[in-house]
Amino acid sequence: MQQPLTKVLLKIFAGGFYQVHAAILLVVFFIMIGAVPGNMLVTYHKSLMLAMTSSPVMLALVIGCWFVYIFKSWHYVGSQLFAPDKQFLFYSSTALSPSEQRKSWYYVQAAILAPVIIYALLAVGVGLAHHFYILPAVILLFLTVMIWCGALIYVRTMNGLIDGSKQSLLLRWSSKWRKPYFSLYVYHVFDNKKVPYFITKGLSWLIISGVFYLFADVSTDTRVAGIAILAVITAHVVLIFEERRFEETKLSFARNLPYSRFRLFLNFAGVYFFLLLPETVWLFSRFPPLIAVELLLAGLSIALLFHSLLYWFGLNMDKYLQWILGLFMILFWVIMFHLLWLLIPLNLVIAYLLFYNNYYRYEGVVSKE
Image (cartoon, rainbow, N blue to C red; front, side, top):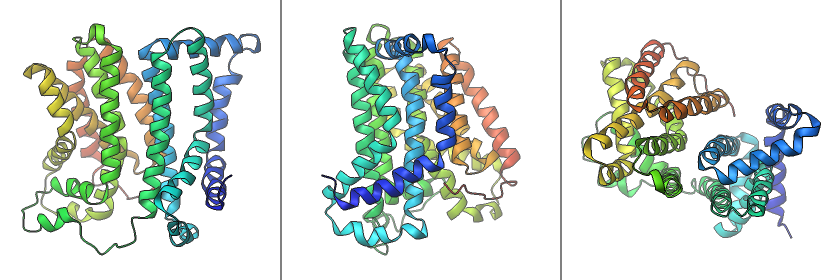
C-alpha cells in the first residue's frame, strides 16, 4: 500500500513531468509507432528489441538515448523542488526517515521512467526468448541503478538544507590554501555536489566495465576505448551543465577580471582534467602512454565541446540535451571510422570558437525547467 507521501509526490512530480513534456512524448510516440506501417509494426519493434539484446553497439546507442531522458527527469524534479509552491515538502516529507523517503521517490522515478521501463521489459522478454541473457541483464541493471540514483539525488536534495550554515570539512581544511580559478568548481563539487559526482563516477565505472566486457574479443581496438570515453564524457553532462550554471550564478564577476578568453578556456580544461582524474588513472594503467594521452585529450575535447555549447544558447536544458544526443551519434560514427585522432583538434577548434564568440554575449537566461 502506498503511503500518503508517495501519492503526493506522484501527483506533483510524475504528473507534472508528463504535463510539461506531453508534446515531446507524443512526437516520440509518433516516431516509434505512427511512422511504421500497421502491418509491419510488430515485426519492426521485435527486430529493434532483438538488436538491442544481441548487439552491444545497438544497446549502447539506446542506453545513450535513455540516459538523456533520465537526465531530463532528474533536472525537472530537481528544479521543481525549489519552486515556491513546493517548499512545504522540505518541512513535511523530511519528518520521515531517509529510507521511507527513498521508497516514495523510487515510485516517482519509476513512474516518470514508465515509457522506458515498459519498452525495456518487452525487449528483455524478446531477448530471453531468443536465448540472449547478458544484454537483457545489463538493461535491467541499468534501469535499477538509474531509479536508485534518482531517488538518492532527490532525498539528498530534500535533506540537504537542514543546516546550510555549517561549513564542510573540505572547506575548513583548505581555508588557507591558494585556490586557482579553475579549482573553484572542483571545490564546489566536493562541497555541494558530492552525490552527483559519485553517481557519475559509478556510472563511468559501469560503462567502462560493460563496454570492455562486451567487446572482450576486440578490447585492443582503440575504437572500443574511444567509444567508452565518449560514453563516459556523455555521462558527465550533469556535472558539465552544473559547471556552467555555477559559473553564471557564482562567478559572473569573472567577466570583469583581467583574464583573456584563451586563459579562461584553459582553465575549463583544467576543471575537466581534475574531474576526470579517476578515468585518467584507468587510461594510463590500461593503455600505452601515447594511446592513453590520445584518449585523454579526446575526452577533454569532447567535454569542452559540450561545455562551450552552453555559451551559444544559454542554460536551456531541452536544447542542450538535443544537441548532446545528436553529437553523441555523430562522434560515435566518427570514432567507428578510425578518426579518433581527428576529433581532438576539431572539437577543440569548434569549442574555442563557440566560447570566444559567445562568452561576452551571453545574457544569463536560465531555463525554468
